Length: 448
Image: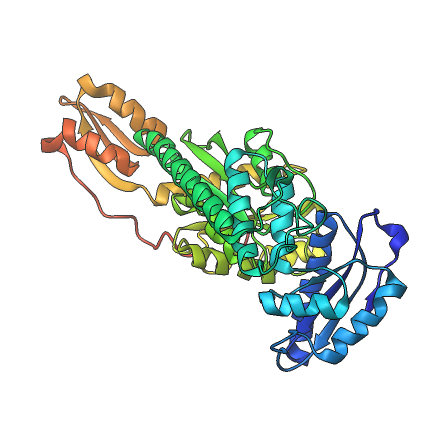
C-alpha cells in the first residue's frame, strides 16, 4: 500500500485508489495503470491520499475485491480521512453498491472517472452531447433508487455537462438519451456534409492520433501555427481541430487533431465519440504521435493500436512521430532512432517545442500521401490548363513534356482528379504500374 504526501498536492476531494492484479506477473502492468489512475484522479480534481493493489487469482462476484482487502480499506477511512474510493477496474452496478455499503464512501470506477474528466473538458456542443450520452449509458444500469444521483454536480464521478442534475427516473433518462442520439445523428450528418465538401477538392486528410498527453495538439500548432488548445494534462483536448498545411512538395493537406486514447478507454466513450472518431476513419494517412519521454512508450503504442483496431482503421497507412525528443537522454534517442515497427510507412524523431525534425516529418507525410495517390499518365489539352494546375497543386508531377496536343504528364494524383482527367482526355489517357517496392515497407530506423 502507498500513502501519498498531501503537502505536495492541491486541495480537492480526498480519494483512495484501489486496483487488482490476477498474478505476480501482472503487478508491473497494474502498477503502471495505478500511476495513470492517480494522474486521472488529480486531473479530475482529487487529492489522492493513498493507493493499494490486491493480488488475487479471481475477482469476488459480490465485491470484486476480497472481503479482507475491503475491510482493510474501510479501516483506513478514518485515519486517512478519504471520502471517495476510486477503483482501477470497471465494476458492475451490484459490486459498486456492495462496496459503497462496506467501505462507507461513494465509489467511482475507472470508466466513471474518465467520463468525469470528459465532462469537465468538453467545450463544443457536440462534445457536451457526446459526454452526456456516455455518462447516461454508464449510469443508467446503476439507477436503482431515488437517491442514486443525489451527488450529481457535487463531486468527482457526478459532473454532467453544464453541471446538469440528471433525472432519477429511468423513463426520463431513456427519453433524454433518445433526444441526445437524435442530436448526434444530425451532427454526424452535418460533419459528413462538411467532409463531402472537402472531398470535392482533392485535399488529403491526415489524422493525428496517440495516447492522451502525447503532444498531438502541440505538434499540430508547431506544424501549422494553428493555435489549438494544448495543455500538459490528460484529455486537455476533446473536440477535433482541423488545420491546413502545405507540404514541402507544394501539395496542401488537412491535419486533424483527435481525442487522445488511454488504457481501458470506456466503451461508452468509444461509442459516444464515434462521430468525432470518424475523422480518423476517413483519413488518408494517420500520424501516430508517441511520447518519447515516457517510460512506458512502447506499451502505450500497443494501446493505441488496439483502439485503432477497435475502430477498424488499423489498415490505414501510418507514419510514426516520436515526440518530446527534447526530453530524451542521448541513450534514449539512440534507441528510439532504431525503433520503427513494421506496421509504419516511416518514422521521425521530433520535438514540438524546439522544432527538431518537423521539416523532415512534413516531407515524410508528403511521401506517404504521394505513395497512396493513383499513378497516372495523361496528355492534358492546352485548353484545360487549369486542370494541370490542380494536378500540380494537389498531386505529384514526376515528368512533363509539351507536345502538339497538350502537356504530357506522368505522376500521381488523388482519386478525385482521376475522373476529371479522364473526362477531358479519355482518348489520350494511359496508366503506368506502381514504382517497384512496397509503399508500406518500413524503414530500418527513425530519422534523427
